[in-house]
Image (cartoon, rainbow, N blue to C red; front, side, top):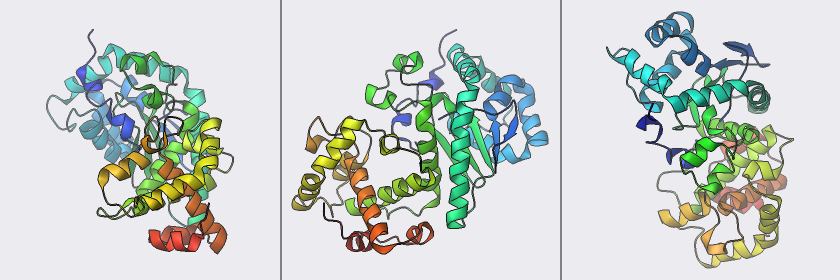
Length: 334
């Protein structure tokens, strides 16, 4: 059987999504400590396409909003109310590559279960430290390599086919760049999932905001994630190697000076923002030895300095949306 072009149409989408993962639990539902872990991919691949919609609506009513997004925006076969829906779904699950992916995911369920336990613990801390609601359900799914996360009120969806391991032959076959593939490991799942939830919860910078606004916003997300996952190393948090992280510390002063002198800090030019913030094999302005996303790392350092200088807790930090206020109060001088 030929590979369905559906799985190829968005392979580059996973490179920039961080929104930006794993799978697990028992066959259908398992309590993880606070919320429930639901293996949606198990439902999709074990219930007949003709019966899946009725089963979701009758037996898994809490999955209905997620089911709609999955059908219409992830695998893009349209609403389950369409007359030809069952046939479209059968095409998806009958694709030979997708079936092999499901087999791989099912075989590694225990590994993903441990990752989801860490995610659940972290989101429990989120609720405790901030008073904000945590998702009731973690829902794992297979996206056709199209999407890593879905965030909806009460649930966090995790696209497990994007965390099969950096050496997965599926990724090589899709020509995903090496610098992206190296991050597609199950042990990166907790940090990525927690950040996905935070992106959905924290008010983002204004659309017309500049580099400083985006840098501080990303820094807040990464700083809060580090507190929700206290045992996570900075290497895992940023997807950096030890050498890359050391490079950032050694070059921190020089990078900050460059951003200030070149008037990048307050730039609103989209390209300037992207090259310091978005995923890349390195940061062009700082040479091939630099890691990508150094603007995010500097933002994290500024937010860390701000919290240290002010003694602010996470709940109050979330409410500070002024990047200039955070920069000024941080007394950041690398």
